[in-house]
Image (cartoon, rainbow, N blue to C red; front, side):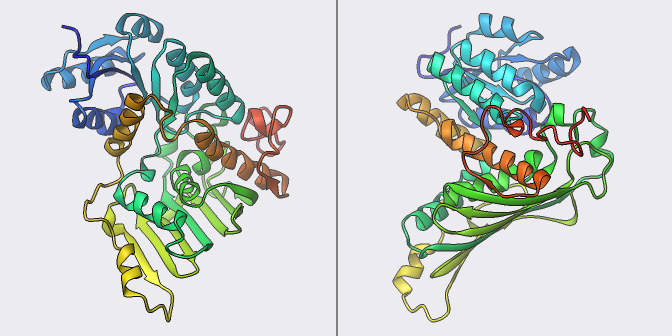
Amino acid sequence: MPSPPSRLRAAIVGTGGIVVGSHLPALRAHSDRVELVAAMDVAPDRLDAFLATTGEAGLAVAGYTDLDAMLAEARPDLVLIGTPPSLHREQTVAALRAGAWVWCEKPLCLSLAEFDEIAEAERATGAHASVVFQHRYGSGSAHARELIAGGELGAPLVAHCQTTWHRNVDYYAVPWRGRWETEGGGPTMGHGIHQFDLLLHLLGDWTEVRAMAARLVHDVESEDVSTALVRFAGGTLATVVNSVLSPDEVSRIRVDCADATVELTHLYGHSNDDWVYTPRPGLDDEARVARWRAPAADVPSSHKAQLGALLDAYERKVAPPGSGADARRTVEFAAALYKSAFTGRPVFAGEIGPGDPYYSAMHGDHPDWSPAR
């Protein structure tokens, strides 16, 4: 039976844990607006297990082991991609060329060159590709961004962005992890990218990065820790730390503005209570401080919240949040962090373009980091 006109036809590419645990619940939460009609996975056993799950939920989902066949036969309006990172660019471009919008797990691609290939497919088709950065979404982050952008907290001066997680050797036993060709980088690309994307979302354009990276514990191609000093266009200075070596795991963003500090502390997701506002000493303006309090509605950061924003954009026929230049800024930041760390010099926004080795690969073909060396 055809889908009602009011519902979009969605298809899933990759049926592993992130899709089952996050994408599928998000689709169910918006079942009045979008219908899952197809799923594709190269592993038949995994696909069958996924189809059994959707069947138990009363969904009629067609299964495929070939992406092109799924796109041609199912004709989805929206494709959700939850495969390993090395497949994202190819699968995103294929879906765009089939006329579908794309919502892809981070990272959307492994380099600025790949991002620009996706952008060209968007221009050619009129469809849009958006990356999953669910930490931007939810009432707490929206409220903080509005306060900072509106000057309610005073000018942002100093910021800290911390992703200090722990991953053991078993984590890196998965063949595609820790390798440039298949993961695109270490915790900078695979873990901390969520937090520093949120930092950029709150503070806007960055202008300069000075960074360091190292392999301190794990026998991998990419780094297992990176740090950066960042200057923003508005003058804010920030530190960024990305680690998979930290037994006490935490995700944290702190922005010290002229009149208040706003701090978010969580691990894999946040709600209103995770955001704390501290007025500067001597600030005596109860009405102003009252405006900083969390909004009455508590919408946690989640795939559900971001999917809702994407569906809103689709209905309005506008580019979704987390796409276009907004998404490219985050990829460029990662490339700049690696280039600065590996060359030992500052990197400025806009300097990495075609012909620069860090444009086509995050390792920049550096002799100490390139897998080919």
